Amino acid sequence: MDSEPVQSLRLFYALWPDDVTRDALAKLQAGISGRKTSYENLHLTLAFLGDQTIASLPVLKKILANFPQQDTTLTLDRIGYFPKSRIAWAGPHAASNALFELRRCLTSELIQANFTVDTRAAFKPHVTLARDATVPDEAPFEPIHWHARHVCLVASSAEPDGVRYRILASNG
Image (cartoon, rainbow, N blue to C red; front, side, top):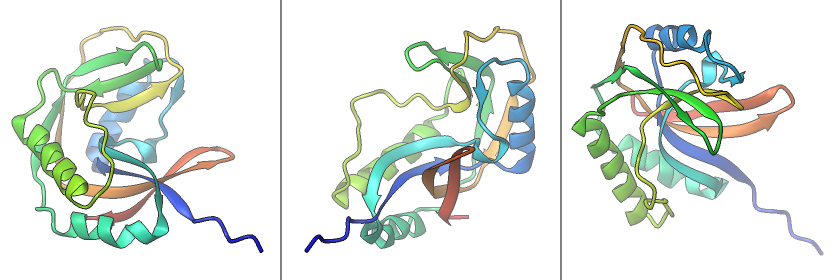
C-alpha cells in the first residue's frame, strides 16, 4: 500500500511593504525590461526556507509570534542587477544595522528550531523588480523610504498565470 506523500509548502520570511511603498516600487518597474514582479508579490526576503512540511507551520508561526514588532526604515535608493539570475532589483546603497540584526535574529531562531538556513552567501537586501531582465539603466530616482513594520511568513506556489505568494502569518 502506498503512503500519501508528505504535504509541503515552499516558504520564506519577508518584510512586506505597505501600499505607498508598493506603489513607488511599481513606478520603478516601468523603466525595466523583463517579467515584472506582480504588484502584490513585491517584498524583501529575510530568510528562504524552501519546501517545508505542513507540520512545521506551528513552529514557524510561533517563531514569528515571538519576534518583536518591527519599525525599521529602509531607504531604497539603488537599482541593481544580478547577472547570473538576470534579476533587476531595488535596494539600499547601505542597509541599516537594524535590518542586518533582524535577519541575524531570525536566522538564529530558525537554526535553534532545527531549520536549515543557508548562511554562506552574504545577505543582499533587495526587492526583485523583474526576472529575465536586461541590465537596467542607472537613472537617478527619488529614494523610497519604507517604514517596514511587518515580518511575514509566506508560502509560494506556482500557478498557471505565475507565482502566487500567500501570507500565512504576520507579526504586525
